[in-house]
Length: 74
Image (cartoon, rainbow, N blue to C red; front, side):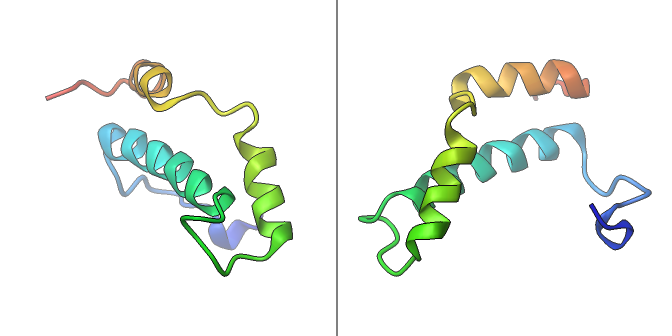
């Protein structure tokens, strides 16, 4: 990754980071579904499906991220 995309100071809380990762998974799911996103090129759908192949479901993902990031649920 290029240094220009790397943040040196965290700008979000651990809970926000958890939410962002879960939202990214949901975004990839929409990208891979032709009914949800009609005008997405096939190569983009293919990449989204490849990234989702080993992505855990949200219910599994949230507790793992919370623990790893030290995020406490409010």
